[in-house]
Amino acid sequence: MSRKIRILIAEDEPAITRILQRNLVAQKYEVLTTSDGAAALSIVEQKNPDLLLLDLGLPGMNGLDVCKNLRARSQLPLIIVISVRSKEQEKVRALDLGADDYIAKPFGIEEVMARVRVALRHSAAINPISDTAIFEIGPLRVDTARHHVQINAQDVKLTPTEYKLLVFFLHNQDKILTQQMLLQHIWGNEAAAQASYLHVYIAHLRRKLEPDTTGPRFFHTLSGVGYRFQSTLETAPL
Image (cartoon, rainbow, N blue to C red; front, side, top):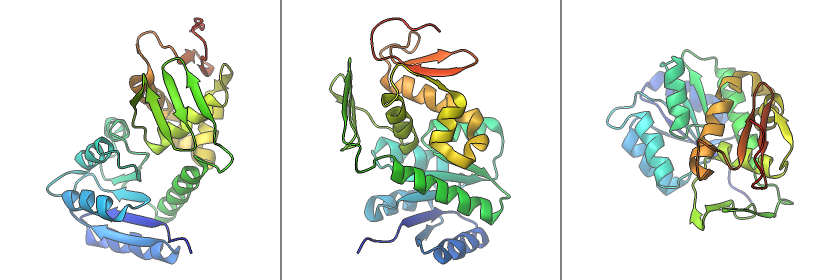
């Protein structure tokens, strides 16, 4: 019998923790809680949660440092930030450090539950059983059966969202993918809410996978249209 989906809440406001925990348990998730950033790292290492609901204003180690530490350790739970910090630059910074989604406080509990379902559904879709392809394109090697990504034989750490985006590009090499196509594939019905962050994830992939980010080898921008993953060394129009 498979275990329940495990969710860790890292939040220092007891009232918010209680309402999140109550609603998640009602949805049959296993729920762990902590109010401390360092403790959150320890729980992730010991309990391996599937998803982390993370407040940025945690005592001791703040949420941004938690994100940074998790990604550095290759610990890859999904991370949804829930924070009172609603400025655009705060959201982008959290995404840059490895968060998969961002919800500003005050929030509606139904919105949080929907975002959790979407994140988990998309994570499950990252590695369907039938997808066992190995892609080798120049210095890039991706083994989809093992979720293993390498550049020049060196392992590369990707977040779940980055990985899903990469695999979609690999299955559609040399095709023009509009922004709407990419958004719909990654976020489904939540695509509109994520539209302004697509370029952030593309930038992450370029930084991690491109030999030269100023002259992309793989990820080419088609101005006003979308993107194309170039499988050959031929120069694609920008």
